Image 1 (cartoon, chains in turn yellow, brown):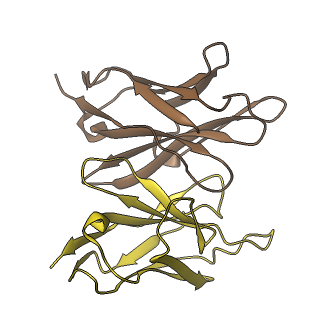
Image 2 (cartoon, one colour):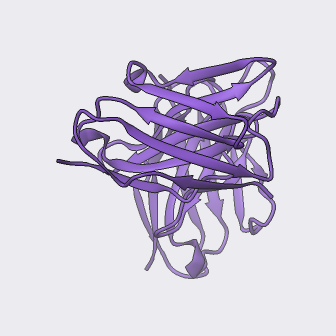
Length: 113
Length: 120
């Protein structure tokens, strides 16, 4: 199985300041079709996970442009350019390249300082 | 807009079978381009993908190794829904269970989640 490792596991950020979450995989996430199927999800308190980003950097409709994804191979990053109160929650990366099994990171808890 | 509505009991006795259903609106369980998944979340295991069903001229399933001997994910085309059955449950199967659509190497959207507690 592919192991996904996130860091940090918790993050306290001042409103309006940037935040960055790293995700690394134990194997390359480059698919044989040339795409890299790395997803980011946000889970707000008491809610189901919601997809923010797919294929490393493609933002979902309705996701604010302060969220961005980057990376390649085995190392990926989710950045929030200016944290807002509604961004509080847990963020997960997930690999889908090594189908049929999907693997999640441990999650990074974002709080407001 | 695709929506998933989960249903099923929140309490299951040890050694019995956990059964949940996910009703689909805005898409078809028989679609040739998506798959239908179950995922669970617990403090000890985090988010864990469990299995999926999908139709590509015939029905297919994939299951996580950790539950492969105990799990079944089945479609019900007549009701446009799919189900999860997990046999021989133990307290370690206590978790929030989610269904989710896979539009292709991703999971979106997710159902509302069902907390299932395994206890006598």
